[in-house]
Amino acid sequence: MMLTVDETRHGAWTVLHVCGELDLVSSPVVRQHVHDAVAVGRRDLVLDLSEVLFCDSSGVGVLIAARRLLRSCQGRMRLILPARGAEDGSHVNRVLAALGVRRLFEVYADAGSAVDEEAQPLSA
Image (cartoon, rainbow, N blue to C red; front, side, top):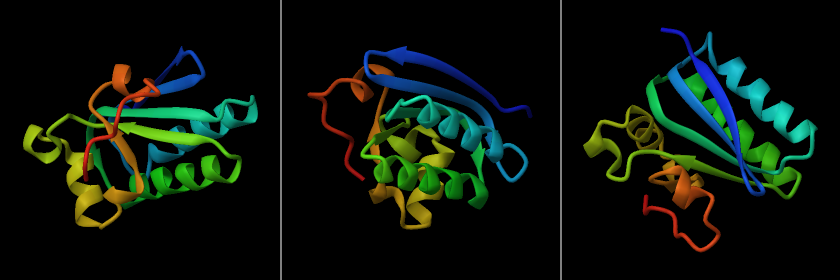
């Protein structure tokens, strides 16, 4: 399955909508989109993973590296996963939880709440 990444802007936030499988072959595409956004000065990033059907360790590695990059330049990163996480079939949520790194990320149910400065992230 092909991975696609579409970019939209919501105020100060750049939303990267990722669709497909996030694996060894496709994860460099996401990494490049994150680096491109940072290179042009966008420091507030939302990764919409609600349509990612599969994520392996290299995909998780990209998420952790993106978080580290944004923190190093005083940026912010948020993830979008289904509101009920693994109960709604979010493969990414299950993988992050199984690896013990889910708590590292601010997770929201949708783009509206992810770009809302007043919204609270979902609990881990």
